[in-house]
Amino acid sequence: RPNHRAALPVPLEPFYLTHAMRRTPFHSLFSWSALLILLLVAGRAQAQAPTWTLDPAAYEFSETVTATVLVGDLPATDARVQLGAFVGASLRGVARPISLGGGTSLFFLTIHSNIASGELLTFQVYDPTSNQTLPLRETITFASGAALGDPAEPVQLTTGPATGTGPGWIAPNLARFEHQMTVTGALEIDGRVSAHPGDRIGAFVGSDCRGIAAPVLVGDRALYFLTVGGVAASGETVRFKAYSGATGQTFGVPDSLAFVGAAALGDPIDPYRWRVGAQRSTGWTAPTGQFEATMTLTAALDPAADPPGTDDQLGAFIGGELRGVTSPIRFDGGWRFFLTVAGGANESADIVFRLYRANRDAVETISDLIAFTPSGALGDPVAPVVLHP
Image (tube, rainbow, N blue to C red):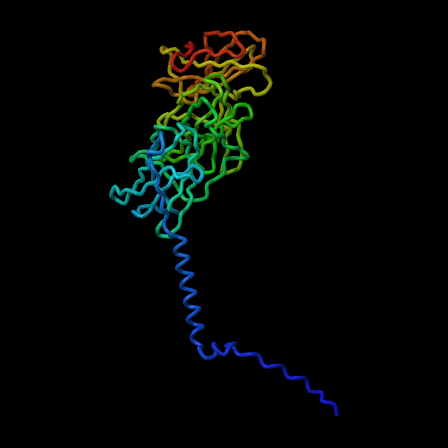
């Protein structure tokens, strides 16, 4: 009868496939162990501490930052920690923590540049506990001679991915601008100071972005150190936008500024205020787009009058129509209004000024009248036009 039994499968070779391996079974175990050790050593070599060094003599300008660093929720105090400041991939400063006792350690960081102001600085920290180099959320715009933070109120830097620069805003190369001004300010959204790390302030002339700043914690305050570029020494109208990292909303800031080259507006004690949302009492909003010409006015109140407050507003009106509005800014121990007034290309009507006093919720009429002059520029921070309430 035919044989219906299935063919037996061909026996497979045992695990040791070769004669040599059959004679040395422990050779395989040794090889795998050696390979594992090599991989571990290679992994450790890839995570070595960075060798951050630079030559300060190669740079013309510098600024200082006194800071604390939080890695997660813990302050960085290990002497092996390194804090690095970068422009792109270029190292511009490095520091290690210095213990002040009581569990407090500070980084005294000097940052270098060959451009007087405008370069965008990012930060990284080497954490020896995890043997990792981590990005920090905060960014700062370089300004020669600036000293940010001090031992009493240090700048606070925190680990985490660097947040974006707002909805589609592209930071300008400030080196292309011959003139620059700086604004030290705070952002208020719906009447409250906002300190979200994703918040941004942008400065614009028309649709051209002239500067972007992220919040920096100085003590318990969130401040913006904004550098604005200008193509002329004065006269351009700077408008602002605010971006909320918490909600993703972009706000137009009602106030505008007249650009003044080399001006430094606001300071950490009396910062300029960008206010957006639902806290305006006057409803005054600077006009946009419908006028062909502007003029600028740098003004101060009569010293005999009550000084303004940060929440006050100066409005400019022609024929009862609002043509410009701004709030006062601390300057050289006093207050200045940097006002842009909109008008027609051939307009010459008188401007009527009104002052809103926030502490009294009252509007005062200024006795002075000034004729609108297209492209005119009256006053400057040192010699302002004096207005008499």
